[in-house]
Length: 88
Image: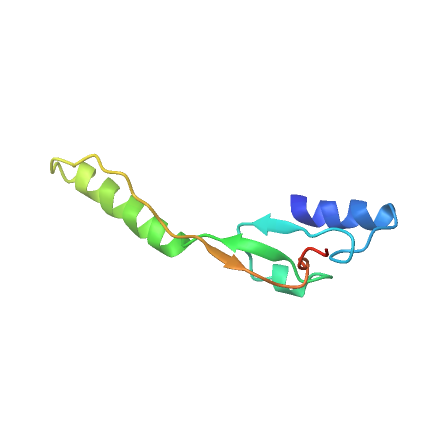
């Protein structure tokens, strides 16, 4: 939502996205592809994150000794129309 606010503020100042300014959001949603311009975003693997969290919780609740571990998830950059290459 903040990235969409940046697009709006840029337009209010006479700037065009992505011609004058590239904007990237975070936490892709199904509707973001339909904004004007479609927003480039970083998508997190929410399903994998939820599965890991629920699995760890169920182990803990089941009384099993839980190994404290760090989970690393790979985000994905979804390039859409709100970004452009830097001009020389």
